[in-house]
Length: 609
Image (cartoon, rainbow, N blue to C red; front, side, top):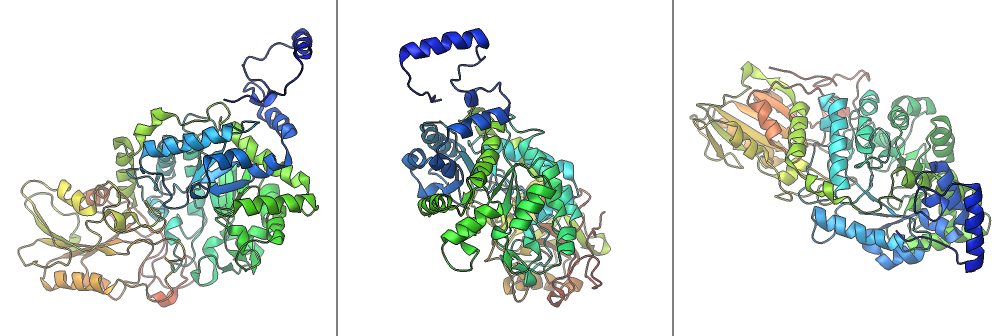
């Protein structure tokens, strides 16, 4: 690592060394300055480093740019404190080693600054290290909520931390602790459940990612997001307005964040949404008074992607928005492309007195504390011993367990499930049967996700084929064509195709599409028992169709390990319970536990064999 030393006359240096030797023992490290000495307390190191930083260095620490909008030289010149990969933003080649090489190149540039402050690199590893080709893709949070298994979720956090560490990355924008109250919302699958107890209990993911304390070999900074109320917007509109009394906001949406703070979560990301018409990115009361004061959050607060641009409702950020966001308590600002403008704007706002230097120092203290606690000053580069864990067999086995535990059996007429492994004849149909992209959903390889063989894994069809014995025939036809009475059962794997925030909002119908309905109808007309496997990021409007189905299995968005779905179809007793209330009709949205509406299935429902 590059050392920072001020040049002094040699005679004076010699005198200083002699005097120092008389009054204090030599440090147990070759580090030249107190902040570079790992034997000193973190608070001491932070104070020493802060005392040496110029205003430009402090502002750089508060700035996070997107990797595609910077060069290595920019990191050195502008003293940038952080980079991120947006959804789908990956190096070429998009391999674990490609990521590690990219990370190390950027880190070398950060360490070439006078004070050699390492950068911290953030990614949305929200269901596995999902930007990286070949990584293990775990079920999305809605499926994990169905497992009711906080210990499993902590194990998943640890596995994700290993894969993330193997690519150099040290900061994960996860977990999403939103309480999704309206299934129309396109981020419903990012929620562990519609009542605060479920996301609160699944905050174990924080411990999995970070370890019991920061600084372990695979310790990755976790992020509780999106603070606060993003799942409660009117109409389930993404980035909308959550109209609630403070008492209701605190009762429904705050508890998961309190749980994460109690677990020592290192960062909190602010929501795009508003509370009673006020954008969260400018809400000093909720960020500083409640989160940092009342809840005692000691980590740092990061904005969402261009989130400060939205405070005044007009495109692009103004000086007033920058000041509002920083003074509200945002410590690091995610400005993917306009980071140079942000730096010059914030500098001017500090110099004209609109943003106090004390606020700048507080933000830096919080950011630098986490960098020291993570051990970035001692171990700034990728630990390549973890690189082979990306997509390894142990992690895929854990993901398969998570898929198995997340399956919720909603109907099983005449005990049609489980299916016999031997001496059977089964037809598999549906657009989601043999499609890793559809099984994985949004935030997989690209931001919105996409259909097809986008990353290695086991499709649900492949899982079914692997589950049966040699005396069983499995035939696949996407539309169900060719089925006849010789088949003992038909499995229709249907549901949604990938989407993420914004594009995932469903304002009209929430029914199955025409192709899915036609496929199921083809199977039904053959007079064979029909098992519907529903791959979706939320409950769908199926009440009118359900009487014609023999069985229904909610598989959520299982990810790359489709064998976990097959495990349940062929005998593993289903244990999943609904994390959400299942509507009788789309007209009931929003529908939630305790609201007096009659659901098709209540939250917590789930059959077994």
